[in-house]
Image 1 (cartoon, rainbow, N blue to C red):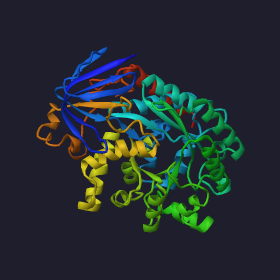
Image 2 (image 1 turned 60 degrees about the horizontal axis):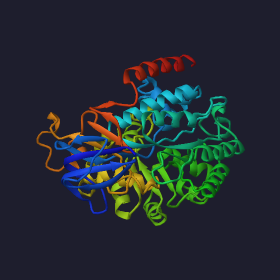
Image 3 (image 1 turned 90 degrees about the horizontal axis):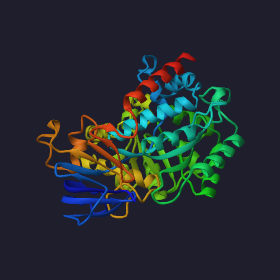
Length: 452
């Protein structure tokens, strides 16, 4: 059994139910789990680190991403577009996805997440061009190579432009084909056990690219197999108008009528919910993945996060796709989230520590994981370390629990541990050659764009 001991940590922020912040403690991990936390533990380990200058935090949990978009960042032609025009333009590029593009973009995006303290990544992949290969298999292989905990999704679209949707014909599928491959994905990859390194959700793309039948069948299948449900919802006013014109109801009412509320469901964005809809989310314990940078980039609006938290709506944090972020740093998202809601809500905004809890315990909850999101004995050994002696942190150490949001971190973390294994050391990935990965990814990206 692999063991790891961090001795004499200056500060350990547990993010547990009691919000404990511990000083001068050891952290002992064995076989991927936290076994004990306390002062001067009488333990031996395969790897021993001196934690006397480090702040230790639970690994961040990303609740919404589109990793394939890593290869379509910072494109000048879409910089001033809002969501519908942005999507329509980019589908012309994304229709050329294949297994190698997905593998290398996933390695790149999840590698960046790890470097900035994220230990679990949920990815919403919904573009499956014909003949592209096993794209989820490519993602899980990339996650295993990096050592990150991966929650993939069998996303889907069945409404193309000819049906009144946004995507081209080449990336949509029939409901029957989607259901067959959803079953294959769950049976092949989903591991529901505690400590699982790979899980699968069903995730039709959005109300404006899928049919009611696909949403209905996905909900039935997910509950048959005991997996979670995810989609985009209430992201823009355009979506709201589309749903009212096409179905005569608002987006949440439409989804709820198809079985899409409950503690096994979470929505990305959730910007334009009305008061009664927020209360319905709280009543049904339906979650929201908050993506502040993407929402700002696409001028979509500001989610009502302070009100959601006050009502008890489960809320997690997410980077969203790299084409609307344009990065994969959940630490950056954390600080932007804090500042955005200070600007928009003043004293009602969440504190720095509350945003950290949103990105850890809150995110774990909406993914249905009780084994991650806090540092406690019996939980997965997922955490990261920050050297408190950094120049950019001088004068900011009064509250390590708040500092990641209030002051922020300007570079990679010093160490990231997933499942008791060091995967980032001194700010660099341990499990892959970063320079070689970057070279291969750039070459693949060039070839991908040459197809257009």
